[in-house]
Length: 353
Image 1 (cartoon, rainbow, N blue to C red):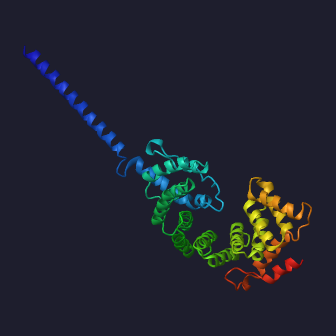
Image 2: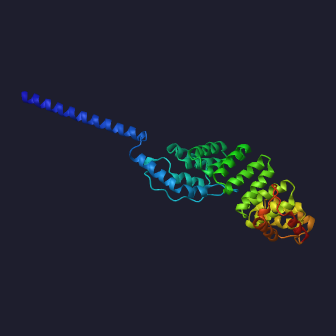
Image 3: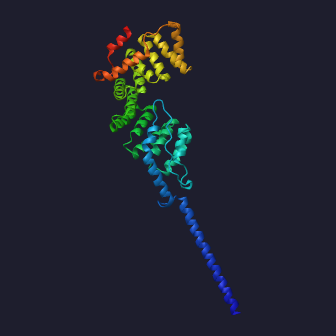
């Protein structure tokens, strides 16, 4: 009888020990699951993943941000180098997925992906930068503004965030604030063409056309072949009725990029306004050949009825472009008129010839 009692006692102890072991294992598993759900507190794989991504973003920053910068017109950025492999369980969204959606033009999806990414990596300025660009391209100016501001907060010395914020503010109808951001960008990088160009656009939107023309001249001092500065400068001069002065920059813009319908159409408008209808017809025809649905097609039809289809142009684009290029390069030191007058006597010579 005592033997049986002892056996039962031993069995009871064994069962108790097994129960305690299972309880301990259960508690350990519960703690592990809870820790994984909370993302950890700075140790283990999550911390290593954050360091890896942070190192890659810092190393690749200038390359892909330069390519992501949106110009006039906006362009699709080139793909950045592949980031290092990161275990999928440590992240909900990868950088390459979010950036890939942006490159593919799926800006709504890019907003969703970059939104998750910045939640996981809230201190990465370029994640906020790309979310801001995605919002802008998708037409959500509020998203664009808030995340470009956050990017600037995290990296106050970044020029491109300020430049693109200025562009967003121009679209939002707030040119005064855009001027402030563009001026800050110029202070950081006085040689930045993008900063000067957006500063000029903001000044033009605020009504300061003379200030805008002076800024475009500053750009052309740095790069005489900057097509959009040439075009924007010429367009402002056309708006002010200064057609003779608009011909030069628009001729050079159309020479720099002979496939740009905007450049060709504006060049045609300047020529027609300056009294060169046949040359204007040629510019409008060139634009209409590229885009039959553009306003240039209507202008070409109207001028054909006026001057005839076989009339000889009074001036040529190549001659006008070359003459203006020489003004920019050789005579840039003689810029004395802040409104942008460049050797008006030579423009009269074009007319006479």
